[in-house]
Amino acid sequence: MPEFRLVEEDEFQQAIDLADKVFRKEGHVSMGIAFPQVFSVALNQSYGAFVDDKLVSFIGLVPSVLHLEGAEVQAYSIGAVCTDPDYRRKGLANTLLEKIFEHVNKSGASVLFISGDLPIYMKQGCTFYGKMNQYKLHRDDITRDTSYKVRELAPYDWFQLRKLSQNRKIRYEQTIYEIAQLNKGAGFASIFKMKHKVLVAEKNSELNAFLIFGVPYQEQEGGDSRVIEWGGDPIAIRTLLAEVFTYGPDSLLWNVPSYEKGLMQDLDSFQEKVDQTYPGTIKIMNLDLLLNQLVPYFKDKLAISTVDEKQKRLFNNENSTTLSNLDVEELILKGSKNVEWYSDIFPIPFPFPQGLNYV
Image (cartoon, rainbow, N blue to C red):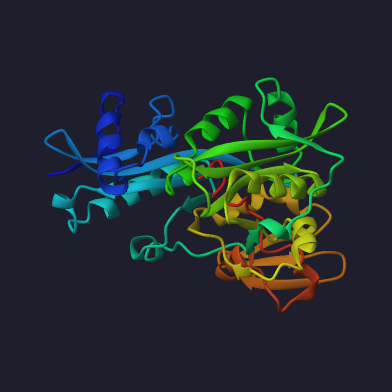
């Protein structure tokens, strides 16, 4: 009979070995290196299914705090979901997912992010969310502003880089140590056998922007690079994008969330762009809790009150509408083109999930 529980300190190596067996091939770094937050003994959040003390199924669980224009949303993310091939189709992952839901509901988190969109998640109420443009940039697409000095991140830059990171209105909460650790792990980039490079744009001894992007483990000419995370002045960011091509890629993939309006306006002229939802899915675990955590975001925009167990009222000084709870969730995650007075408020601008904090 399988045992479903939190993974204990001396069992995390089993989790890493199982994840490597399922997700990694020759040339990949270990999942334990790429995703230290998933296999963290200190956090002690991830769950496993055990048969005779052997870990046969695993779900990594990572807590985070999202900053959304003054609001703090408590969230969890799951990733590295894997089951030993000999134990598949036995419902183990489904039972683990139920354990995850219990954990999240006890924690005070209001949303759960999932890196995939498999039926196991969609059947549990997970759904697509967010809006973004994916740009494919080429060497001659970007011109640099020569007033900036561009260089790689130096060991004395961490305070300024943290400041640039914290100045973003939409972001994951990150300490200096977390930025450094997640940058070293290069979780999302590692899927493509890439490590991170960090460029900074400097003027008058002050950092104006940073850009984290992926480069292959083995130096090579050609291929795609990927932008992982960025922050700072849009003009300085453009200059950093131009510098990426000195590292040899033919093209650069950049997923820009719709809340990055300044960057999007600057990139409107590029031909190779695709409108998309965010990668991965989300589940609102507790709508009332999420709305309460979002109160600072809604300030001076609108208010939301409860009509009854199934409905909410959205209103400001001039407008009012009543929606079902399900419609409110849809509005939060996907927005609406039908009601103009709150079209600029929704969808809620959750941080892009494939940055440093990717799980």
